[in-house]
Image (tube, rainbow over all chains, first blue to last red; front, side, top):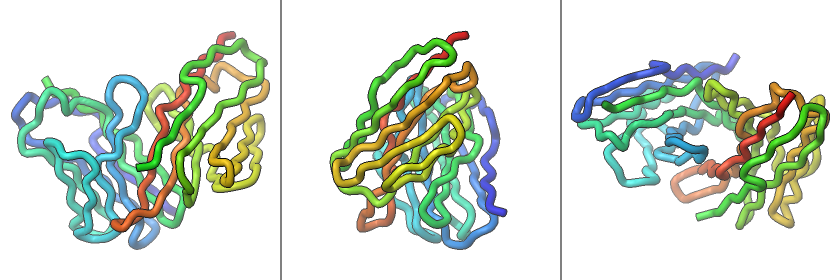
Length: 110
Length: 111
């Protein structure tokens, strides 16, 4: 079966600390992978998407970066967190055409 | 980039009522999906519907790709239907496929 794992579920980090969120998928090869952020309110903002290993497209210039070191692994990172990085981060994958989301990580920067 | 507009932004219903949520998009799309975000933040897939009509229990969806809109119908609403409903469209870019979301419709179903 096809599944997506995202962790941790919640995270509280001080300003200036680094960040690493990991997303892994199982059950298929070479999926499209996405990172979204949902700030207070409703909208989902696309941060990064990837069509293959080492191929990252950035949507919004900001304090974050993404990497895809393996086919089924997508990592969201920051060297120094800002207060404005707080939000709900969602990883998604699209094995064929339909997209599926992970459980999300609620990040609070204090 | 493509624009995705959802209406209404907020909707309050009494249990048992029917509703229609709309999603308009500004350009041709490869695919369209409807999601329900539950109170815990999880995005639940409702429909994958690039065109045509699909039904799943009390929910149904119709996409008219040529006119660039999709509708989500909820019949006999229940309190568990509350949450935010999103539509998302997939477009092809030079760097791959991109999934763009609308701002969502916040649905509240009162008992």
